[in-house]
Every structure is written in C-alpha cells, then in structure tokens.
Image: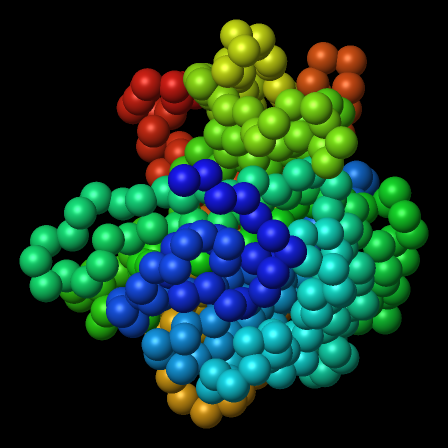
Length: 365
C-alpha cells in the first residue's frame, strides 16, 4: 500500500518506520528507535554555514540537540541533553528551541544566547515536495534486535532571520540563504553507541552524500525532488554517479570535484563543485562518529539535563584533521550555465581512499 505523508508526519509522533496514515502496525520494540530532524543552511557567499539537528529516543527516555555555526572558519557548536518529556510537541532542549509552525512547510528555529557566543532566530520554508521513503538494512542475526531502517522524507527550502557570532550579526532577508532538511525516524544508525550495537561504534553516514537545490530540481543523494506545483508525481531518481575528486594533501578532505549524473529519464548532468574556503560543518560536533570531547554517540548520554559547547579554528589544517569524519562541505556548484551553492557530505577519509583505490564510480582528479 502506497501511503503518502500528511502534515502530522513532521511531528515526533511515530511508533514504527511508517507514516502516520499507514494502517496500524505494532510499535517498535527496539530501544534504538529514534525520531530526528536535521538541517543545513547557508548563504551563497561562503561566509556562514549552519548545521542543526535533534533526536528523540522514546524507549531510552532521552532527547538531544546540537547547533553548529561556522562563520569564516570560526566553528562553534552547542550540544544539549535532557530526559524525555510527556509532550511530543516539545522539541526544545536547553537553548536549542525548534518549533513546527506548519507541518511539511514551515519551522521556526531559535538558539538562545549563552557563553558559547552564537545565537540565531530563523524561519525555514520548504520549497520542494517531500515524499516518504525507507531504507531497510539487512536482516539482523538472532538476538541482535530489530532490522535497521531509516524512514522519512527530505526537502529543500529558504531560510530567513538573523544569526549572531561574537559581536557580528548577519541578517538573512528573503532570498539570501537556503539549504536542506530531513525528518527521519526508524531503528538503528548506531543509536546508544557500542553498548546497544554489539560493542561496535557505528560508522556514520553515506560517503556519497550530496545535497544541492539546482534550478529545476533538488538533488538529494540519489533522489530528485520536485517543486510543490510540479506535475510529475512523487520524486525522481539518480541512476548513476561518477565522481572525480581532489583533496587536501595533508588532511585528505575534499577540495574540488566533477560529478557526472545520469537521471532516471536518461538525461546526463555534469556538476563542478568547489569547496568555499573552510566552510565545513564537522558533524562529530553533532554526535556523528562521537563528539570531540567525550566521544559520545547518538543517544548514548543518559544523565541529567546539561548543555556543553566548543569552538574550533578550522582554518588550521591540524584542527580539520582532528575533526574530520562525516563532514558537510559548503560548495559553489556550476551546472552548465547555472551557478548555485550546495552541500557535499562525504565520510572522510573514506572518500579519498575510495578514489585512490579507483573503486567503481570513484577516481582522483
């Protein structure tokens, strides 16, 4: 049965990997079940990049959020934790306070001022039509818990409001900033750290992640997202990707690349990507792969409410090397006669190693 999304699917109300309109199914019994929101926002100048997210773990009774702000290489992160409340609409964790204004269309995001030295008040508006999808992992061995699955939707949009870093305030009026978001829920993805995953730390992310809103379609990994008024149903797909990439010699972080795409209708597109300065959101600061200070993985902290923060100068290659892992690189993207900006999300140094080895679809440039 093909069941579509409804505005309530933006809320943290799921009990299994299906949309809320799906016929009743038993709730997940796996303690690794999660609900997550994730966002990346950026300008087109290469000055300011934000990655913001939060996750609820109903069975573990925990909620956590993070906000990463990179302003010209000044990389600041706030992470906050609290016990689960009885109100699924309450997404606030410490100073990080998102609000769903209009499901599947509009959110409001706030980071309150504190000793971390950054804050924001932003409004997000979806511009691409979300469609439900699920990625199921292999069947687990006996006694290993439920089959892992990441379900939910993705979209692109516009963001407006203000961001403050130190003594600098940046105002994003309509049209100056954009980005992407997803709303996922499911089982697994390393939730709870090694203790809930057979003693193993989960390797975060997909090394081929790419999130770019092109002029006619949104490229979200291997999905093609259409506008709300587009007559094409559902979403399209990318059938083939060939990558030729360049890297920093000392850190093996992405610098520049050519990406050739084959769409499901046979059309081919070639994109040129170039990283904008040191505008990278290092996602270890958002729990992916373990936080820089304590090595905490998603859902691993179960203590009392607390907020922590860090600040890094990522213009220093030694700092970038220490932080690398799942990384969100802000890139200028040339698509024929069109130029925009978007995000390349590799797992590093895995991508460099894939290119060096000449694995299918990967090569050095």
